[in-house]
Length: 316
Image (cartoon, rainbow, N blue to C red; front, side, top):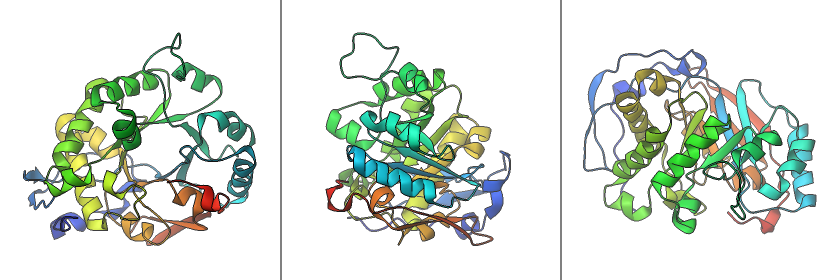
């Protein structure tokens, strides 16, 4: 893997750390240059703001589980002590969504892992946004690398699916991220900005959107972006939003990280100003303790228990 991108300027790292608790307020960015190891272009400046709102933790269960194992996992989640200022969302396989909705505490919201591009009809195997709403599903994950690179969904298709889901009041976890060869070629920002543009071309209301940066080379590999690598991309994406959408959207949109996140590394990642939470795969099922470090200024730690119910059966 290529060498870690150089860190952001010290003035950027010392930005006010309690913005996650503040209302969305556009704060003027301090002109500065970002030295980029993962892109040949230079960002002109980095937005001196972080996503407002609650810290966000999402668990993507992917294509895993049985009625029994999911019942055990839901029981553990229901018994967990969750801080009130952390949003928690889980995404079970479609076939188990109703089981989870009917047994999971209302404190935790439920996401689908995919949705069709429009209204239901003669589309064998697809699930419509209207059907998700009908059973009380609040979120959907779109743009995940496994659907981009295994199923073959392209940027435009993903953007249109996102727009329709939002039009039906299904909130969106919008995934972006680069392949290893793209990072090594210095194209990380190019790839992420292209994927962001596809979402932005289709989305008019960002109030119900969370962006998940998931470098493909870190998903299920055990490799994880360093806190500096992740922060660099998160800050650049926030700057892209400021320039291409609006300062208000850049300020208020939460940008979360995914890619081999676990209890051992999430605290250091969460200290970074522009990392507003996590989208977790394997760790959402297998790690006994998941720690989310909130508001670095106060060094405030929240945590919840995750049961190791899938053991060796879980495939990241």
